[in-house]
Image 1 (cartoon, rainbow, N blue to C red):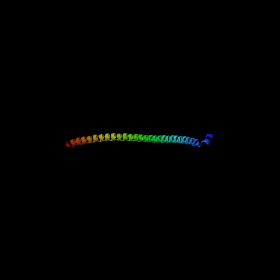
Image 2 (cartoon, rainbow, N blue to C red):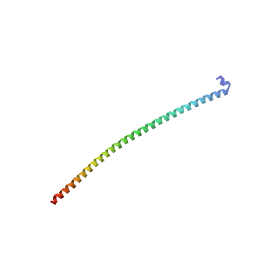
Image 3 (cartoon, rainbow, N blue to C red):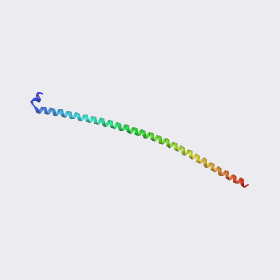
Image 4 (tube, helix red, strand yellow):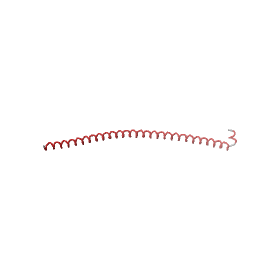
Length: 104
């Protein structure tokens, strides 16, 4: 304090150094807080993206299941069509045989 009392410019130089250190600490604190906020925002974004990915995976599984069901229905319809075609062929053969019998 004596030194400051004797030389006013020394006091202002000291206060400027203290202010500079305070500003530097404030900047570092602000940077740390910004980095923390950014990291938290990125973590939330990653979490949201992960949830969207899981939702899309669930939707894809549901669509795959639906596609398998439709494929099975198509196979069943194809079997039914073949059975109907066979039945029609047998009916045609039966009609032909009846016609032959009616001729006699």
